[in-house]
Structure formats: C-alpha cells, structure tokens
Length: 143
Ligand code: DQA
Image 1: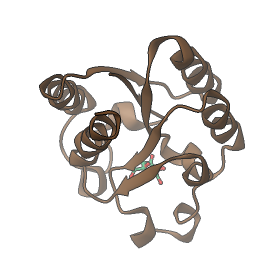
Image 2 (image 1 turned 45 degrees about the horizontal axis):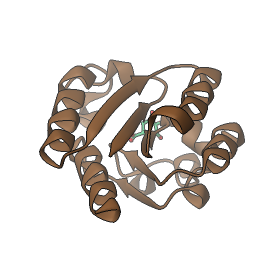
Image 3 (image 1 turned 30 degrees about the horizontal axis):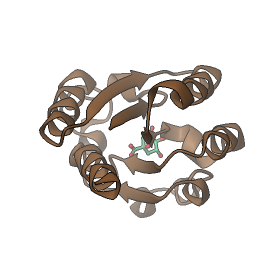
C-alpha cells in the first residue's frame, strides 16, 4: 500500500515553532518515524510538505496516480479551505486527518474542520504519534 502524508503550512517549522504546542521534534525526524512505521506494516510512505494551498491541491490530484491512501495535516487550511476539501473528495482515496495538537482544546476557530466531512477519520492531540496511528489504521483497513 502506498500512503501519501501531506503536511501543510508552517509544519516545516515543527520542532522550533511553539514547541509547547507542537513539540520539539523536527518534521524530518517525524517523517523518518512515519516512513519506518509504514515499512514495518509493508507500506510505502511518501511525505510532502507545502506552505501553499495550490501545491497541496496539485499533490492531492497527483495521488490518483501514485497513492492508495492519504494522511493529511493541512495546518490552518484545515479550518477554512473548501478547495482542499473538494480535492480530497474528488480523488476519493481513503483519507485520515491528523493534528499534532488537540484542536478542540484551543481557540474556537480551530474547532471547525472543513476536511473532516471528507475524511474517514481524524486523530488529534497525540503529537507525532498520530501520523503513525493513521498509517496503521489505513494499513489495517486495506488488509
Ligand atoms: C495543526 C492545528 C492547526 O490549528 C494549526 O493551524 C496548525 C497545526 C496541528 O497539527 O495541531 O498549523 O494542524
């Protein structure tokens, strides 16, 4: 199974950005763990990060050719991007939404996700482990 993991805006700064909220581990370190977890489950994990909505949408479209499932942390786009939600609906791949922080424990604007209605599930508040749990869920779903 080929799993595409998408990290949205500002997540490239994970490790230095508000570490009390997002943790001290870098995105590179987190990606290494996700790829290893995927490999242990017989999955190929590809990680992609962009700060640009259009680039994220283009990558989701490309997933029709090179992925069987998607894990997405769209960062703040989660809360207002109907375009990313439409792209996920268009490709119709199994998809799990992940957030490092518990978005429901934070500001009101973070309580809404435009992506949840087009995703199969959502994991939030568990830090980087959420990505590996999402990969596990997708791998088992496919088994
Ligand atoms: C986030 C939560 C979002 O509200 C925020 O804008 C992010 C990161 C998370 O992983 O907790 O950039 O998606």
